[in-house]
Image 1 (cartoon, rainbow, N blue to C red):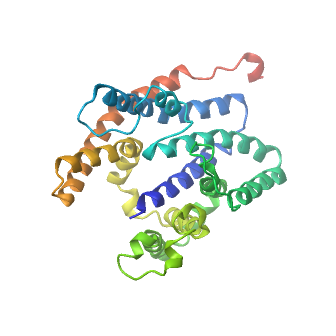
Image 2: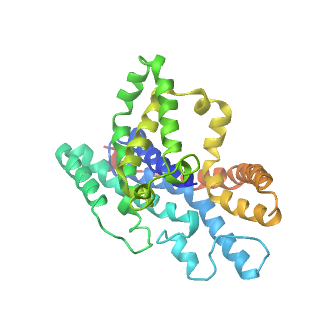
Image 3: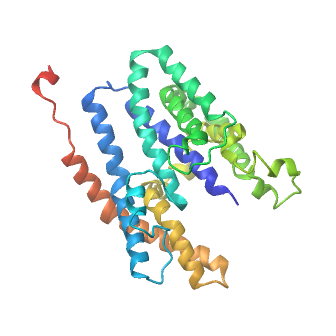
Length: 313
């Protein structure tokens, strides 16, 4: 019903918010920026590479298992270098480009406020120019996705003010959060069509591509800000915290798991969804504990930056 696209919008906004919140206040020198790159790549690359190589191996040996379409030797380096991504992998390339864009924004933010504002404004304008991007590579994908990342960065720069404001507005913030959530979750035309007759103008361009319609940026931003204000229990309990930890594993695995379960239980769609969720949760927990965590620690240890004495002085 289109909710997957809404989830990716939130993901890019959250990514920008966390980068700005955690790093913008630190001095942007070689040591801190190198550590940023190491931390980010240690977080996503090991499991991503394992899933890509596993899918290629499945196609090579002809196993009767549904896998992402990485069928040729050329597909492997294209994915591992983030040039292009098939199916849900398309989000990984833009995310990595955002990492390196943030390095630039980080430096500019600390050296020149007017230059930072100019870059942000120019990026928004370019992103919403009426340009049809036919290419499917990761760089072309930035055309509509960039505003969500940049909005997250701007909110992250003001994160201290947002959280301080939240402490004095607890009475209505939860209501605002749930109101924004309802608007956000029910705003996709495919969802609206379940309950009402939608005019044709709302189901054609630009609504067929929600990324190009500014309403979704506003709805995503409103939901994100109110969630920070309210810090609702549904997002802050222990189960939610655990889901957050395994979320990257779950994202990479859930679609493949769902396709395989649907193939095994074609006559029971609801049972397929429930079983796929359980299987994806178990697999995600295992890959988080067995691949993500130990590899992240190893890469961070190997990539630790040790400045020369002159740099310390």
